Each structure stands twice: as C-alpha cells, then as structure tokens.
Image (cartoon, rainbow, N blue to C red; front, side, top):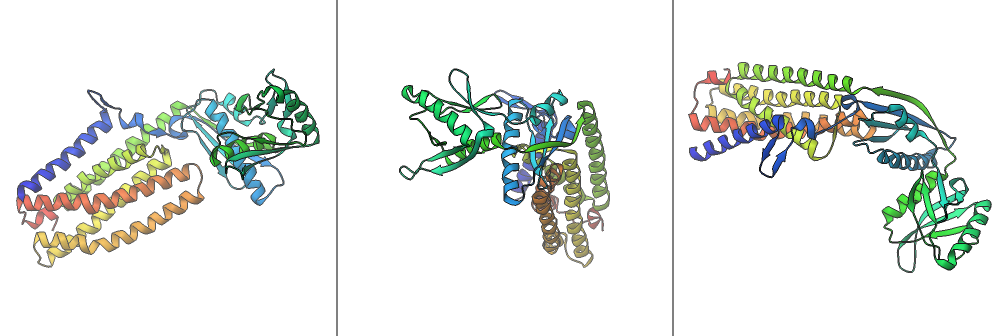
Length: 414
C-alpha cells in the first residue's frame, strides 16, 4: 500500500515538474515538438498590440430588423478581416446597433480601419467582366428549400431596374450555360451557371448547398445590398511595445503574488501548505493548457481573472486546512482529522464556487470583448481550483501522511 502511495505521489510530482518545464522552455524530443506556452497561447489586443474600432449603424431600424442588419454586417466585416490574413480577430456585437472589431498584431492601423470600414460592394458580373447588377438593386435574398429534392437554395429578387438588366444578361448567357459571378468586395462568393432566361427579377442560386452555406451566401448578398451606413464612433491603436510591456509587468506581478501566497501557505499551514503549493502549480498549468486547448485569447482582464481564481483556489485550501486544525484540536488523530476536515469543508467550498461560477456565466453572456475573456478565465479557474483543492491536494496530503506516519501536530500548524 505504501509502495502504491509512494509511486502515485512521485508520479504526480514528476508530471507537474515536466509540464512546468515544458510550459517555460518548450519540448523537443524526436518528432515531439512543443513551444513554450507564451508562444502557443493567443494574445489579445492589449497584450499583442493592434487596433480596435467601434462602428455604429445609422438607421431607424429596430428590433429583429436591426439585429438582422448587424448580424449580416458582422459577416461582411469577418470576410474582410480574413482577407487581411490576421489571426485571432474579435468581431462582436456591442449593444443593439454597434459592432466592435479588435485586430491584434495589425501593422498598418489606418489601412486596416479603411479596409474594414468601407461600404460593401456587391456586383453581378458577366464572364467578360461587365457589371450587370449592383447590390443596391437586390431587394431580397433568402434561403429556401426545394420541395422536389429537399435541397436548400438561395432565392433572389431584384427591383424593377435590376430585373430588366438581369433578364438581358441571363438571356445572353442561357444558350451557352455560362456562369454569372456574384462578387463581394472584389471576391467571388458564388458563380452559378445560367440555365434559362430570368425575366421576372426572381432568380434561384442552386448547387451543393447545406443550410449553413446557403444561409452564409444569402447573408453576404443581403449585406452587400443594405443601404445602411456605419459611422466610426471609437478607435484606438495599441503599439506592440506597449502590449509587450503590459504583459511583462502582468506576469512579473502575478509571479510575485503567487510566490507570496505559496510562502504564506507553507509558513502558516506547514505540511498541508506545501501540498497546496504543489497543487497550485498544477492549477496554473491546467488553466493555461485549457486556454490553449480551447483556442481562447488571453487579455489583461483574463490575467486578472487568473490571479483572482488563484486566490479562490487558495481560499478553498484555507477552509479545508482550518477544518483539519479544528479536528486536531478536538483530539482526533491526524488521519481522521484530514478526512473529516475535507468532508466538512466540502459544502462550503462548493456553495461559494457555484455562486462565483454563476457570476461568470452572467458576465460571459452579457459582457463584450475583454469582459468575456475575464469571464472565460474565471470559469476555467473555478473548475480547475475545485479539482486541485479537492482531488490533488487531498491525495498528496494523505499520501505523505500514510508514507511517513506523521503524528506531530506542529506539521499542521497546530
């Protein structure tokens, strides 16, 4: 039994040590290559530098109509940002009629703002390059289902002027079954072939669509046809140097804070504090690698949430250790006191963590931008802290007690 406890204890220590080394220095063994976590984790605008801009829709539309306009415009913005080759962009709805765009790592801030803020240009172009219809002449673009084969398609309607132009173009293309190109901001988003003349201004774009791909195409066509202006109401540029300086200071401050917490736990709680310090390292690793695993973007508020959740993880250990000390003072043995302390502290810890987790859910659902990042980190931290405090700390502490048969209560700060 002692050999099994010793083996598992050493295994956990080795795993924590290996992951700590890999997180700091990376790993390169044969075909296995892992970069340090600093290079793997996505950094937000406030850490990497870049530009953010907020646009406001200038329209009288409200409710569902306004929401539809904003959602369509977000897709257009996303297409433009993807075309700029940027990674980890953030494009979110802010309030009812605003769109916030964050572009970490952008070099030319002014060019980026001009690119994403220009009016969407939708055109229907012939194979010879002539423009037939513009987006302003499209009045409707919706996803429909063909009753014959249950396949989705995009239904288009043009205004009177657009209908005439489209009828002439399809009349000339139908005999040769040539395509007509649907172009948004200079990019071909679809190229359906013309099978017959379309004289009534009502066209169908068919193909191997799924509901999702047909909805995306319809949304892009509608967005190019929207007569809605967007006004730039806020923008700011953060240099990479400033972002790097903020990251370095945050890491330095967080490291000092965590080391002080570990030192306090060891000095005040002795043996349990040492086990808690090891579990705290495991907690930090779990949070960081979870962040990388879900491809989340780390921001300064995210770092703040991580430090906050470190405090919550320590708080859980403090509650447990105080219960253990109470049990020892009542005359119970070390082993019984440890089991009883964890059991009695469990309900208090779970209640406090659940209420904080609910707060994180609220922040994520109603917050925007960096607030969402804070909420994600907080919720990940809560789950990780529960695991490390209840599982890892308990196992390490009980293993040490079983291996060394500790009986001196001074090792528990009593």
